[in-house]
Length: 364
Image (tube, rainbow, N blue to C red; front, side, top):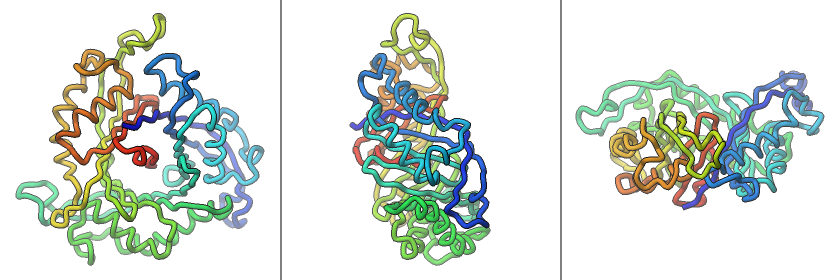
């Protein structure tokens, strides 16, 4: 299994993107509440004790963005677009951290990612309101009834270009998406050719096929079906995720005496299961979200509203240990389960993956 540690930080900063046309509002001085998420491995000398790895990554991230807090970013970077910022942040983190993946959000609907291989992706998120029903589900399945969602659609475009072009790539995504949105938004998806079985997996591939010719660098189409589940298509593989919330008691056994984390306390954890499987051509999904919830329920009940340090098989209540335990417990019932992400309330945590390549992607 491959383990990376997660951290998050926010900062307030102003910038001018002077390479954009003067009519573009981002050409003038403006500001953002940026949010950054990181997956990485901390240097061993930065880790105070076993189980404190997320805190070490969190500290390194806070140090890296501290110089940008309440500053004009143009003083640090000539052209501080999202892609330039995420590249510079990865450079600042290299050394204190290893195997770094970074996701930067400059606004709720846009940002950029940096991956461990040095590649950069710009992303934009759009919303569409659409109805659908799944025609081949078993009798009584709720998705067999006509219903609908405010779908979130995130498009990620891989880049190997200069900073100015990288910032303009967001406009390419907007231009490519607009005509497709005219077809999908406020529509019944079942009535559109190719979407007769309109699951999130099928929808993500349908969008990919129509955008890829105009966007050869398209890296990923992400469909957020609800606040707790969605699907990803990268042109080759389908993935889905399902989120859960845990309220548990915690005690870190390896924390030194006097450290608050050694005392019995509590946290609210965000738990994400990521699964990868072939598409069922009849049902249109890889794994039914409802089946994921049902099969995972015994594992969930063993750790929700429980003292984690007393759970059988858990050496301690650290995020990485718990994520690995969840993966081992859930895989027999969910063989498609590929990765488990576990975040505490402060955004720090761990991800454990069965494949190293799957651990290098942070979804916006």
